[in-house]
Amino acid sequence: MTTTQQIITVAMAVATTMLTRFTPFIMLRPGRPTPKYIVYLGKVLPAAMFALLVVYCLRGLPSHGTTLPDAASQLVAVAATVAMHVWRRNMMWSIAVGTACYMLLIRM
Image (tube, rainbow, N blue to C red):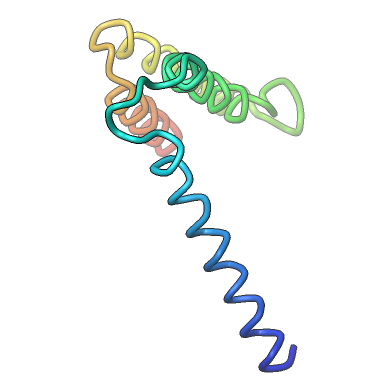
């Protein structure tokens, strides 16, 4: 890649990053009501991302050479995550406890 191409690539990355960072502030100005679809996304996206994480973590559970202790560790960690979320209703605690539980179980 030539120096000119590198400069153009970096400039495009900077412009794209600035565009994605500034767009919400331009579209959602103070004093104006927040659009209903933004409020809706704010309510459903955290749960959707949590579900996506669970699916991603358990995607290879029944196949791909998953051994029984690994599968049991994953399922126990998921149960701990669900229990923590039901108890505390805090996504950060839920993720932290589930991760810690899984890391402890695979080390034993």
